[in-house]
Image (spheres, rainbow, N blue to C red):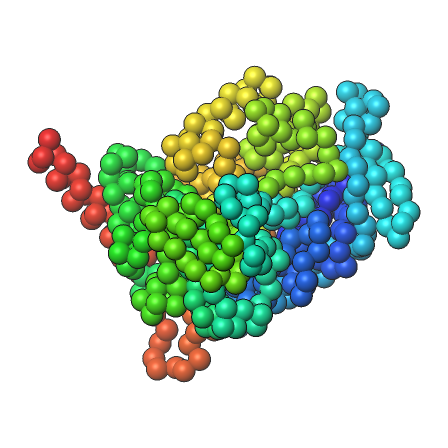
Length: 532
């Protein structure tokens, strides 16, 4: 019999999961509590409980060639970094092109997911849904959770003494939509992440004064990288990943810090991270340094305490007459429809094998898609996760023993502690992670073989950007257009920006791109050898 799969959420992870189930001959049913696909990227002018929420001005941090579904490139004329409405347009077009909408039940809330009484034998789940006040419970052979991790705001009010006395207004960035309300106001933003910096720089054009309070600092990157190309097309490469992971730690850390400080000296702007060598996700903001230079945004340390009208920072300085406090303090991970012990199986932390499978289940019939974060884009990551998960559910791929699974989880936690400063972070190394997933389903490109059989493509795959198309070159779900998409990706990058033609558009030199880090590495090693 065809296995029935319940998919919770019709965002990018949900759509990837529907398509992957169909590719494997499974029968998906997707439940979406909203009225449309898109999840996080479906803008609404008001925040809705239980749903992700974005502000009107959100743009993507990943460029279009690195963001797309691997067999569905963005139109040539789409901008490289898109407004949320453009990305939503693309997501909708993908759902229609792949005929996915008929598998989605909109305005349907999943209220409960329980193990079926004979779970130990069948691995089945009882899924309870609510629609128009009516409850329904249906048995499914597997469940793919695609509800995202930007749904439940983390509002740590108890960490700020005196906040209860504060007479101004305070709320989480989840509730922020647009700047009009803040004209002429004095605003304190707590948190130096992407949302906090976006909101602060946007408000700097209308508010009287904006201050960002940061506990630990952050690297701030521009979307525009070397020679004006998109940052991820120049930095997320297989060769750079190889160097980063194989150079001596002291050299790798120095190189990373040098890259992060290439645009401006973070020390001078009060932004330098406390632990500067950690690979915590940087902030992407093209405007923040200019705002700091203009004095419309200032950076301060953590708030020590609040009074009725002001905030006192840990350095003793005071921001007075505050009208608004906006907490850009991230999100909590929660799945209210599920028994917490299934996901949080150890030390009350989310514990997943390869960031997908709960390790405590007797049958591998539940997968969490999209619960991972890296410098790479979410769409290709979710696509590859869903492809592997669907094959595990079908039985084409198998998971290792529980002993091996827990050993792998422990190993990964140690690496995460080293690279990101937290063992329970959902961050991961993009290229390494994608290759690992691809190898499970036979979709990882064989680089040595490519150099022998197709050197032109091999150069792009290894030294060029690790674009999503690479993971549809071979194996299940192979896309015939993948090779051409890789060889023409720079044309699609240049098309929307060369609106005034003054000569032939210039593509980056792959060898120049990797020559820089090689020279840096060689010189560094030589210096170390001389000194020691």
